Image 1 (cartoon, helix red, strand yellow):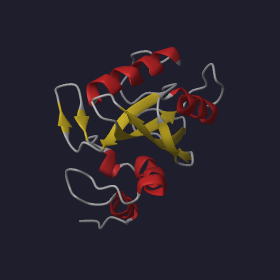
Image 2 (cartoon, rainbow, N blue to C red):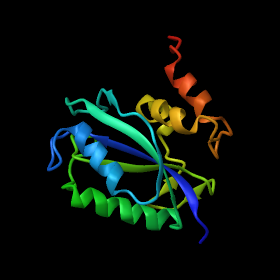
Image 3 (cartoon, one colour):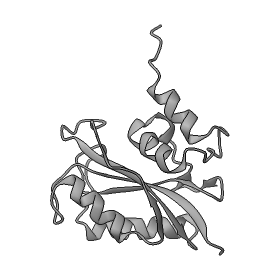
Image 4 (tube, rainbow, N blue to C red):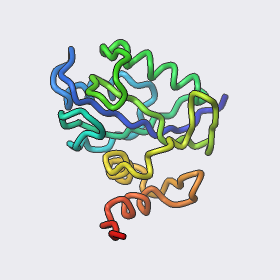
Length: 158
């Protein structure tokens, strides 16, 4: 397969073997293959029941893996960092998600690219807009910069 580019979201909100979440995120960036761009790390509120704030960033990687092969690599990195299966939406040492890829859309039972929820997640869109603001979402056709603007816009109350 020819090299393709992926946007990978990285998050941590638990102290791990690399230290606090921001250092875990930095170590995860260093563990990823083919990194070509790294967004600034931001702090964000958790989704769901976790009370701990997250450190988040997004990186661009260029690799020859198809989406399932890259997902397997990401899951192996998560395990090396100490991530274990647990409660959905709970605290985690490391979370690595494929957000976008230059191949457009990918759909399987265990993997959907673009990531199903990235359009509603400021903690993904804000860093991604810094390094890939002109990248278009394969489903909506909108640029990442525009999606980031939409997620920041106050919502009208019914």
